Figure 1 (cartoon, rainbow, N blue to C red):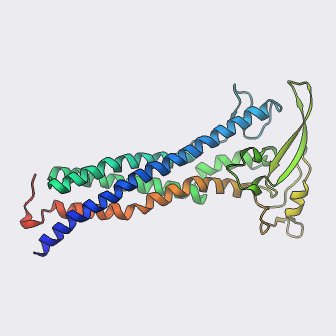
Figure 2: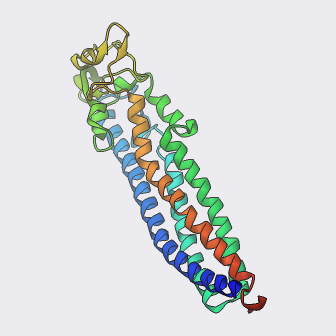
Figure 3: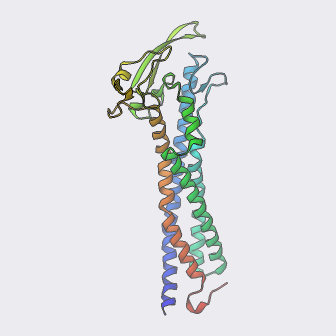
Length: 287
C-alpha cells in the first residue's frame, strides 16, 4: 500500500515539477536572450565609438583598430556571452524534455521515462557547467574572459572615453575627464579630444599623469596622498578594474542565478521519474 501511494505521489510530483520546469524553460531562454542582447549592444556601442574616435585619431586609440574598414573594437565582446547562449540552449532542451516527461508519466511508458531520465541527467550536467561558468565571470574569477578585456584597458584607460558607453557603466566610471590635442589627418589641423574615465588608477591607486593628459581635478579629489591610494569610500571614486568587473557581473550574474535555481527542481523531477520507472503497483509497468 505504501509503495502504491509513493508511486501515485511520484506521478503527481513529476507532473508538477515538469510544469514548473516548463516555466523555467521560458525563463532560461528569456534571461539568456536578454544577456546576449546586452552583449551585442555593448559590442555595437564599442564599434560605433571606434568609428567616431578613429575619424579624429588615426592610430593609437585604446580599444580600437583604426586600420580596419570600418574601424572596430579590439576588446573581447563574445566570450562572456557564451554562458548566456548556453542557457538559451538549455532552455530549449528543458522545454522538450518536460513535455516528454509529462507524456511518460501520464501514459506510464517505460521507454519515454528512460529517455526522460537520460535527457534530464544531461541537462543537469550542462546547466551546472554553464552556471559555474557564468558565476566565474560574475565574480571576476574567469581570467580567460576578464583578462584580455582588462589587459587592453589597464595601462591606457585614460585614453578611452568611458562616457561613450554610459549606459553600461556606473556614472563614477567616467567621473574624471581631461582634454588632449591630437592632429586630425582628415581636416589637417589639431583637434581637442576629451576623454572621460574613472578617477582612480586601474588598480585602485592614485592616478598618474599620462604624457599627453595631465591629472584632472577629479583625480586629485579621489587621491589620498598619504597612502597613495584612491579613496574609494567616496561614491564617485572607483577604479577601471572595478568598472569592468561590475559590468561583467551585471551580464553573468542573472545567468548563474537562474541556472542554479532550477537544479533542485530538476533533481527532484529526476527522482520522481526513477520511482515511476520502478513500476509502483506490484512492479508492473507498461513498456
